[in-house]
Length: 156
Ligand SMILES: [Zn+2]
View 1 (cartoon, rainbow, N blue to C red):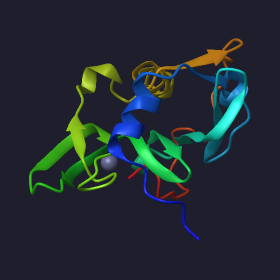
View 2: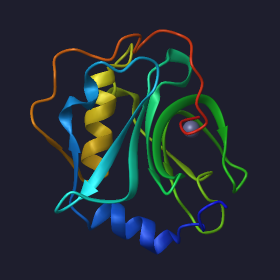
View 3: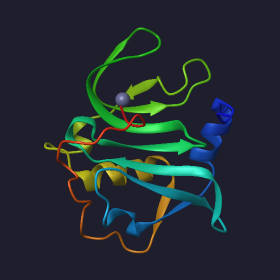
View 4: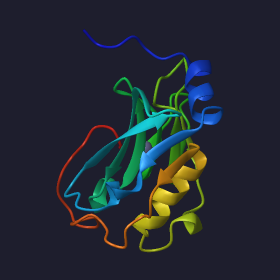
C-alpha cells in the first residue's frame, strides 16, 4: 500500500517551519546513492529522508516524506513543468497539490559552481529545507560523487 499523498500545506509546514536534523556523517562513505533519515527535534523519525544522488547525469538531492519527494534540487536540460512551461538548468522541485513533485522552480547556476560542487549542492539543500547537520561535515565526499552510473527516481 503506498502512503497517502502529502498535502502541500503539510509539506510546506514540515519543510519551512519544523527544525530538522541529520547526522553529518552521511557525507562519508556513500557510494552511488546515499539516503539518510532527517529527524525532528528529539530524534523523531516521521518518515523524512534526505537523498544524495551523486552521478553526474542526475546529480542532485531530494527530501522525501513517506517516500514522496516533497523537495528536490537537480539539473536538467529541459524540464517540462505541469503548467506546460519548460524550465532549464538547475531547479528546485516543490510539492504541489495539483502536480505532486512535478512543479519546478529555477535556481541560479552560480549557487553550485561549474562544474557543480557537491558540497554546495548539499549545503544549499540543507539551508533551504531547514535541516541542520549534527556533527562536523566530513572532508571526504561520497565515492563516485561526480561519476556516471547509478539511477534513482527521486532526483530527476
Ligand atoms: Zn528535476
